[in-house]
Image (tube, rainbow, N blue to C red; front, top):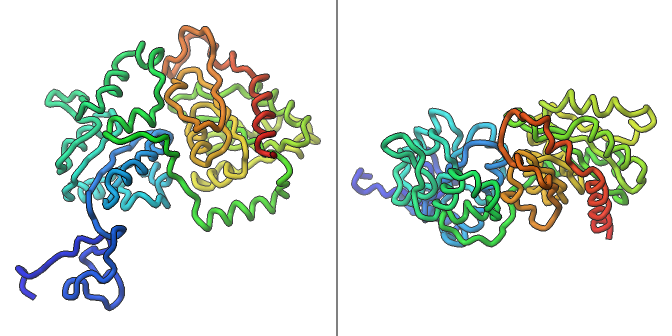
Length: 385
């Protein structure tokens, strides 16, 4: 075959290294498996790098993209840690991780759209470098300043530059706002996340090991949060007080959840109880990795949590969520009518997004524990109906 006669198949399965299927020669005979799911179509690169919760919070745009561009190939650039969140996602064709090699490959592809969700210097600089016909979201100016790439991104951009707008006036969720930035129709689509067949098997095996009782409501306590904003979590004393109340109700089963950074904290909470009460509390492993932690959370029916990745994961797993807010903006979180938000009333300094609190964490001290108890019992009744 002469080089001039070479026709590279525009197919998702073809990589140019070996046949897509054994003993089938796509170059000479054409593609034998072509359909709308294998056609490359419109090529879209989404850039969403930072914070596991934000990455998950951005996944609903995938549904809107597929409605707007039914025949398309969707690439997603993210940090290596967040790759685990996008694993097994049926609407993403290729996940690139933020490494030199993967960025080099991503730069060589010519896209129809690059959509950058992150307002960070490096994400915006990378969006500038990408070969794309259309740029949406955020870019970097010639002076090295973050700027909106399109009119749709203006709302998010202005909100980020105006505390009064962001903290007091905005009533729209982050999911809604990112749809506008990407010029997509917002239909309150859910997060896109799913466990694998193997993970579902792991969950069922763990349920047997813990003597799972389907007549009970399993209440998961996501006890910690990211070390970046450590003041999003309740005090140990508050957790203990809530759990003591729940242990009185035989229809409820308490589960302690958390990641590696929450190991010591969970031990402290657990050791606060008598030997008799300890037998009524399930403590899940915290050091088995992110996906395993998600499997343990999947056992819960209700998740009590601060505004953290654990909260976003509970939303993604379609659990009832009771979330408290202090330093962060509750309006930006979409619970999809499966839960409730607790926001401190009359506290002028909240939200603030400060890493260090000068006011003795009043927003955490003001968390209404009685409200959490009543909401838990209310949601439990809904679940058991």
